Length: 263
Ligand SMILES: Cc1cc2nc3c(=O)[nH]c(=O)nc-3n(C[C@H](O)[C@H](O)[C@H](O)COP(=O)(O)O)c2cc1C
Ligand code: SF4
Ligand code: SF4
Image (cartoon, rainbow, N blue to C red):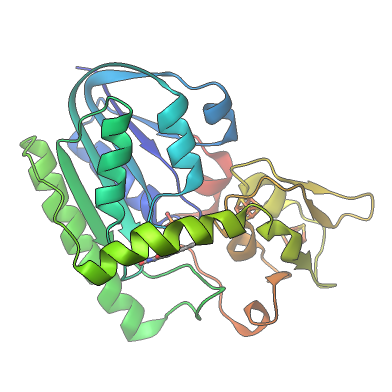
């Protein structure tokens, strides 16, 4: 059996889900969707193929869209997708289904998994009991998803209500357009030690260190927020609000797993 799970993750929520799925299919290869993979896309084929990634502004991340559009398509026996979200996926799964179908990849099963939100630009990441309750919900949903995947059950996309559809079809494109230049607003504070973790965590190879050992962003950001969350000094900011907010990573995903991009 050939099985592959393509994943994208800024702070580990989606990687956690991808790891759980590969426990169901031990032969499954886990492949991170990065700039390198989008530039050299493989042929998508196999008995089981999955896509796991976060929801960005009620829809899929741009890198996932590019990867699916560019990759050559072959025979796929069973195709699933799982999105992780911070409580408001709106019609993201419907968007994903459309994206896949337009690219000759019919979707058999779709899941959305609740996780703590990593959108530190919008709100402070939760901690304590609130975080524990969300992790518990996410783990329950992940376990149920794995049971259904083991049976290769067909789980159709459930339509969102009108408000959710509006968010996905109207807000998502506007938000994504704004992200093209978003890293211009990133900066590092003087607490930066020049450790280079931000360089290694970026899936887009979008960060280098200057001669003064400070990060510089190069305009191909996916806004995964991985660099902001991974900086051990909390030195990376965007706007005025991130300075006072916590940083986040999925509690079961070590930083190393996000740095290597090959686990
Ligand atoms: C740019 C951006 C936009 C987001 N938009 C949404 C959203 O519309 N709805 C939602 O529920 N969560 C949203 N989130 C939260 C993430 O979807 C959620 O925390 C996800 O599990 C992060 O996955 P990761 O750790 O694999 O990167 C957003 C996060 C980012 C970084
Ligand atoms: S991770 Fe933080 S401390 Fe390390 S180089 Fe980047 S900004 Fe500086
Ligand atoms: S620059 Fe930061 S936010 Fe942008 S893609 Fe890289 S790690 Fe993610």
